Image (tube, rainbow, N blue to C red):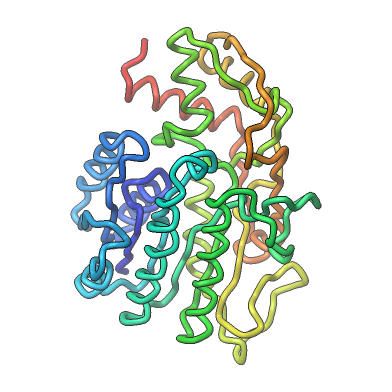
Length: 337
């Protein structure tokens, strides 16, 4: 099996690539090593992947003309996992152009590469932020997503729409999956768990947005990767060859395309997450309570009905277990006593 993973030096891309390689797959990792956060951490992830004989690194930007076409021609992938994107809700208020370049232009280039080199299944990463101003819980894949609160969310909705159009026009089996607050070892330094750990160990106060009452549907990285791989074995059928698997199915009427949530369906308050982190670190946090910033939502809650129907289970790692694993990795990586 040959796979091409965009964003392979990212948090999710690294974990997914590592799992694929451990199964004996050949993986082409495509990453531009943007400086949105610590580039050295990204380099370390790729060095970790380079320990496997089946890994090939391609360092290039999604938006560079011809880069993806060349990578596809060399890799001849059976599966494509499109994880590369400009991430971050709040950063989109500061540097909106980077979201247009990476998430819109970059995805368009990827879809053209898939058009030129058809694959068995295209897997496209999206986000729970796409639900935007929706207030009905849990978030269901069949809910309308027309109220994005940030350019980041809007760019990911556009990514889904572009992927659907190519699935329709060129019969590309495509699954778009929406992440719900992923965390775990090798995590992103811009996310709350990493930031809180760093500051608590340094004896610095942490800023708690939403005054600790905001809730997130935390998803452990190993659970996420497992779900992605199981979904990759369930390509959506052509409209003439298959039917929805139930009322919760988002299968398109006009394309081999499906949208799937990947979350545990168990929202946790931010202050409860901090308490679990304090327990793992053996230290108390000094909290500065702040209101939610623009673009943030009070609660995320994934409907897991479709995911369970398709792959048989949902993410289940307890938050305390996942946080303990992250803390162990962090202490090792940063040599914290």
